[in-house]
Length: 312
Image 1 (cartoon, rainbow, N blue to C red):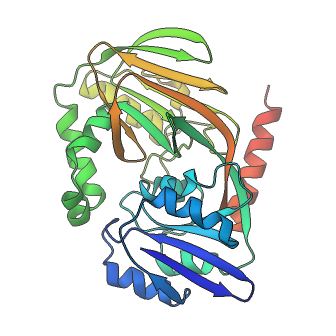
Image 2: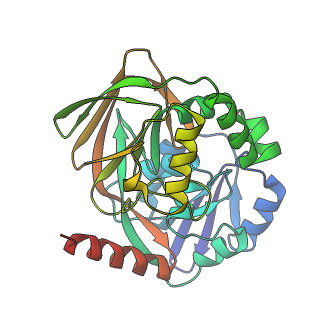
Image 3: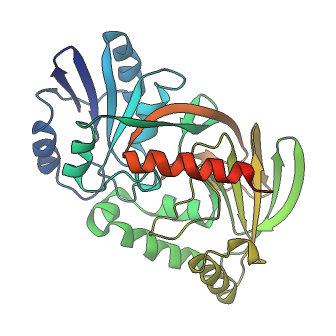
């Protein structure tokens, strides 16, 4: 569903996925119609529609959906000066949580009506497609594959938690082959996460320290866990935000590219969608998309990036 708003000389283009998350489509439309006037509906190639609309002088574009909808809109805006707004109505809304965008629909809509604050976030390119918060291989990708849309709409994030517990039982770490900015590594892992953001999905838990979507790099988190005690140890260090003290976690950083392969093919999840099977090659696209964020969020990211740049 696409919605247009005429605002004096400014026009806003909204892409709505009415199947995202647990919110009823009628409630989503009601909230949007309080802020946006004209609307058209239909099943469309979102990226193609946005690309064709770029020449029509829209002030900014809005993705109303979950982590699968946002990159479809964002892909068409890579390296343009047009901003992306996010209405997080999906199940997890990882990118929105990372950027401190309100999860409440009315508050998120109101954010688009205020004086706009933006940051330029990085992207991860696989083939011709761009993705935003996470690309995962291992336990998490199996969880995504086994969690169908009906379960997500009925149980929300509980569907992911249940399937995670199921996948952890009996899962054996595999030997991964990674190439990070040309450096080859081999290691055993239960999960390899290529992260453009640190949010784990349950506030305030994070995948690791100093993982931000606007720092010009992509981080790799390697989880080497085998037993329930290993996972409990990881959880303990995560809660205490002592990730780097855990012997079961290892962090790498890339400014150019990452490739991952494994002897036994694994599904690849990107932004909560299965996009194929290993091997995978990921290219870092720094400062790819301009995203509308709360003023406090923009300040937070500017300060955190500056602090990291002066750390020894």
